[in-house]
Image 1 (cartoon, helix red, strand yellow):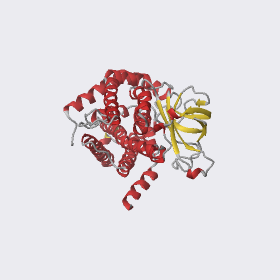
Image 2: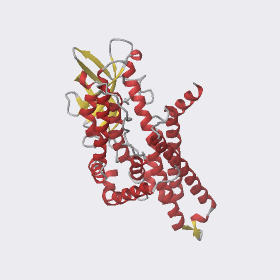
Image 3: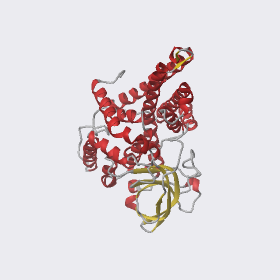
Image 4: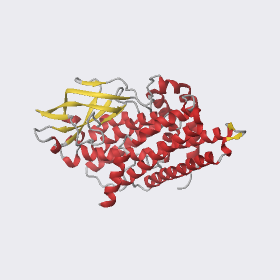
Length: 408
């Protein structure tokens, strides 16, 4: 794949029209007024039929799994999460939203992507039917809770949250921080360690599905942060939250089906999506910078005629081409029924995040003093881009994942 198809471009334009009509008029409230993004995201899903498509695709996947579980001979392949189409139709809305409100993509992706995916990948059929449809359609807001105040990049090694058996139930305790959608989540995947009185480093990692309002579960107000203001982030506090085995993902404590593998698969998906987010930020920064270079006059000529400004624009274009090619590769792999390896997803995330941050900062520099002012969009995009180098694994963690794969 080397360019968008006519159908892709039609969706791209439709998304731009929707954003202009429904999102830009309330962008100030989304970015600075603590307006949660979920209602406008649901409207987007309804407008483009994304909710109905998600329901239909899920129904086909579950029907296929039920036939498999019944031991029926199945000739057809298991339906993909894209329903047999290419991933471009999923990625284009991400790219276009990231031109204006990257935080909305984070809020959406964690709910319909990470939270739902963690249940889909390791949950039982009953668990999938119970929680996944409403997550995929944004009827319910989802949160994926792994990060803790003292864990950060050492998510498992420093994890203190615990599950303790009590008869046929589990008692959960612990706290989580930097949780996307945490303040408003209806459904939460809570990752913790099974406390059997053994050394914490030897404990099994388990994942449970929680619902807001459960006794002992507290969700904080949104935290203040540098960027991604349209993505609510919060803390979770669990004090003796009692759950049955039906809320243990997979309903098993077997390590091979437990939290570590599920979390790793979720990280891989999250890292793959960062390239599309980065592309939206880069494209918008480049367009804004080109226009500013044409309009801004200094020393008697437009600044775009100066070679140092041209160098910045050329750098941005090279980054745009590279990241777009990574997105195209993601689409091609999806159409072939393949996925990137964990190391490949890490490499794509590492490069895309660095490119988006570098381009956004160059855009601020090109705009000079105006670029530092909030009325110019590059100021916001520079703040938003930075977190791409931090969440879903820092640049340093991506580097380790890539190097280990090369040396294995």
